[in-house]
Length: 114
Length: 113
Image 1 (tube, rainbow over the protein chains, first blue to last red):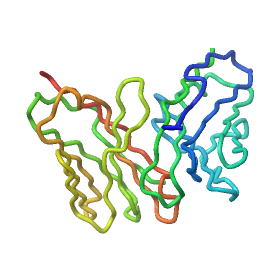
Image 2 (cartoon, helix red, strand yellow):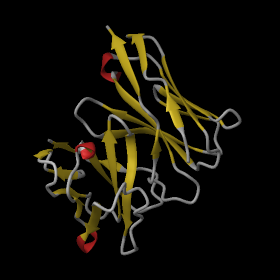
Image 3 (tube, helix red, strand yellow):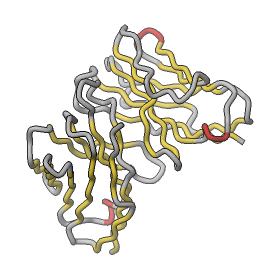
């Protein structure tokens, strides 16, 4: 596609429910990143995928968070048993490969946990 | 861990120059970036500088890097109302993927007509 696409753009969920956020990277980009932007924590790295290598999960805040990338393209970020502190904008970015200087960001998914 | 700080707010008049500052604690960063975020939008890469450079100019944008003081700045010449946005500096820690970034706290730039 022309850019990084994320869906849904907005998601409201009840505390304790699971949510899935989707990211479609730019076609041909092998590196994919998830970030979270929240009032309390600013912009923070969550996880990144490079090709078929094991993902770098070092930024995931708890074991309620997981992500997968199927077929080296689309990625899904899953948050289980959502808490109010999970409310944030979740941003996805992709780059041609992990050494590329430029990453392209999607518009984000605004998650609100009520 | 790395700590990246920015001032929260900057207000300038249209046509003036804006200077947005960023300080960091880890001197081993390889790339240093400036991103722009407009309301309701994702992040847009403005420019970046490699750690062995002191300055980079790109049209109205000038990036200065002072490695000794661990200080990065972004100067926007002839600031326009369309430059109003939040500006983030970001760093690539040594040894990490280039876009596994540590972001600053963000500076809201308000341009007065």
